[in-house]
Amino acid sequence: MPIVFELRKNGVCPRIICDICKEPIEDGEGNVYYDKILRSDKYELSKKGDTANLIFTHKKVSCVQKVDREYVSCEELDVFFYLLIHNTKVNLKEGQRRFAILSRI
Image (cartoon, rainbow, N blue to C red; front, top):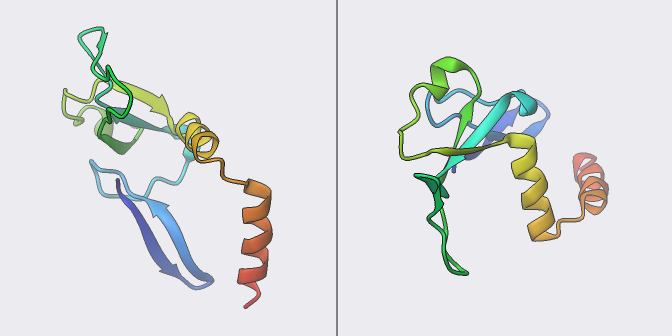
């Protein structure tokens, strides 16, 4: 998963890098991720604990056309992060509060 930390003038920021063009993904609603969960109209994941690999891409045609055909399932990036937050039970309000404190240091 191409999540990196990038040094900027206001500190270190996490970024998502497109696995295809290697450029940062900056428009969350305009991006998708692809995974190996579905292939040939059947679920590959059959038992609890099975995992799937994923990659992040821009939604633009030039990136999507280069995605390996084994990655046949996709979700909008905002749906992916909603599910990630839900499944990890991350408290966004607490994260925002802590970030505000850290950004003043």
